[in-house]
Length: 315
Image (cartoon, rainbow, N blue to C red):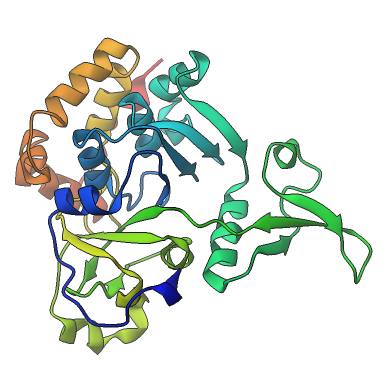
């Protein structure tokens, strides 16, 4: 997708609402950066729910709270599943599992997490597929879009994974400049490849910094500006998930969601309280405890506080 985008350095700053309205469409197939509860653009997810997006399909690669709330809110009705319908050590996802069991959401394909990585990498490299050995001999292969052929060199079976080009992707980063040059602290997962594979790329960032600051450490810029369509400054934009080095995941908030999402009525209560009652993400941050709560989560991330985890005592 990169060759079709302008190399002109254009100021791409806009509100999250504008980015969602301009670059996401009902029916799209999309992916999110980050991993599990870590560095996921939750602010973008809430905005898509507020904007009433529908009939979307999601690349559910280690998708936990993100896919769960997108399914529960009716945004996503199809998933290509690697790891979904669980909140990792916190337990299973009541809302997502209920939606599948009642036929409100369909698992259209399965794949391994590595499989997703290679599908994005194939797209990033401009290749139609990548030969791999993932999923061979597994049931997952049967439900995937991969094909098995004979390796012309060894004669052994080889798995071909088709390139994946999501219609759009949200990636949450630690900092970027107004053009979209983005830096991520810590593990980048497959976000560099995803940024190159996505037809439209929206960056949400903890802060927008001067381009001179980005140029001081160019080796840290994992996503170059010419891949980016929109830049949205959203401090704390990964809450209730973890932003490495800045704030830990909000276990109390996760526990509230897991409790409420056991019923459709509870889902509505959560969405009314935290999504539909606010116009923008800063108001949501005030609702969950404001700067005091975020300062506590910062201390947790820095190992300066003991962890309070309500789910730890659940039976």
